[in-house]
Image (cartoon, rainbow, N blue to C red):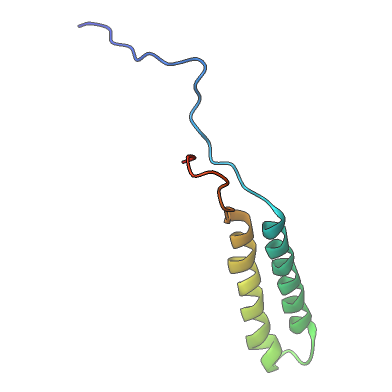
Length: 85
């Protein structure tokens, strides 16, 4: 059987997705960190069986950790030119 090899271009590399971190991403990330800080503050206040410790603090922490911080990392800014893919 014939030996068929695929020709690879030495200069071309597969395009990797780069993280686009700009000022807006940094603001969202800092808001997420502040939200997490508020969540831990609410967790530490009052008796262990209060509304803020059992309900409000975990919700605030989940929003910070699972919504705001990942959104800040994965958010892409607007593209500057129309021709880019």
